[in-house]
Amino acid sequence: MNDATRRYLPLGLISLNDNHSVQVAPCVTQLTLKFVNVCFVAEPHSGNWVLIDAALPRQEHKIIACAERLFGDRVPAAIILTHGHFDHVGSALELSHHWQAPLYAHRFELPYLTGAQPYPPADTAAGGGIITQLSGLFPRGPYQFDTVLSVLPEDGSVPGLDSWRWISTPGHTPGHVSLFREEDKTLIAGDAFVSVQQESLHKVFLQRAKLSGPPRYFTQDWGQAFESVRRLANLKPATATTGHGPPIGGALLTTGLEHMLNHFYADHMPKHRFMH
Image 1: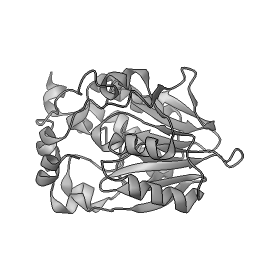
Image 2: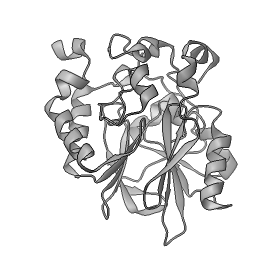
Image 3: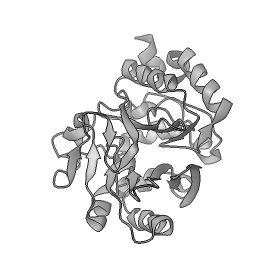
Image 4: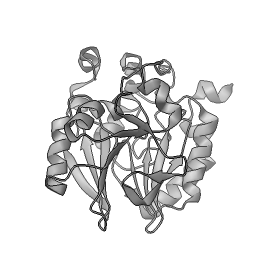
C-alpha cells in the first residue's frame, strides 16, 4: 500500500483483524493482515510447506513470524500467487528474497508481475460501499518480480504440494487461480469469491461470513467470473478460505455458492455492467 492510499483508507480498516491466524483445515492456516488473508499450507508427509499470497506491503515480518511459529526454521518450497493485485503481492518480493523461495503465478498474470503493464483502472462506479469509491486510489502495478517469478505448471500441479491442484478461475483477473485438495474438499478461493463483501467498509469491519462475488472494483471480466464461481461450486468444497473474510464451510458454503450462482448478475455484478 503506498502512502497516498494509506492516507485515504479509514483508520478502522487499516488496523482491522491484524495478525489473526486460524486453522482452516488440517495443515491449512489462514492469517489475516489488515483486510486480506494469506495461507500457510503444509504437506505432512514430505515436510514441505507453501505460502499462498503475500498480503500488503510491509507485512513480511508478520508473515515470517507466523511461519516460524508454525514451521520453525523450515522455509517454504514456493510462494503461490492467486493473482497480482496490490493486496495479494505487496510483500512477495521481500519474502522471496528472505526465504530464497520462488514465486509462482499463472502465465496470464505475467504482464502485471514483470513490469509490462498495469491492471486496468478501478471501476469506482461499481457500487457496494465506500471502499469502491476509494478504489481509484489503489495501486495497479505493474510489479517487477521477473527475477524470482516462474509460471505455474500447465498440468495443474502445485509446486511443493503433491495433494493439491491449482484451478484456473479467471474473471477477477485474467490469470486468477484457486487451489483445491480433493481428499477433504478444502478450497483456497483467492478472490474468485470472498466471504465478506469487500466493497462495504461496514461489512469488512464486522467480518461476518457471507459469500460475495469477487471485489467489484477490480474485476475485469464478469462472464468469466461467473463461470469461475460455477467451476468452484461444482467441486462441492467442504471448507473454503478466501482472499478476504473468515473461513467458511458446511451448509453456509454450500447454500451460499448456490445462491450466488442463482443471483450472480443481479446481486454481485455492478448494476451498470448488468444493464449493458
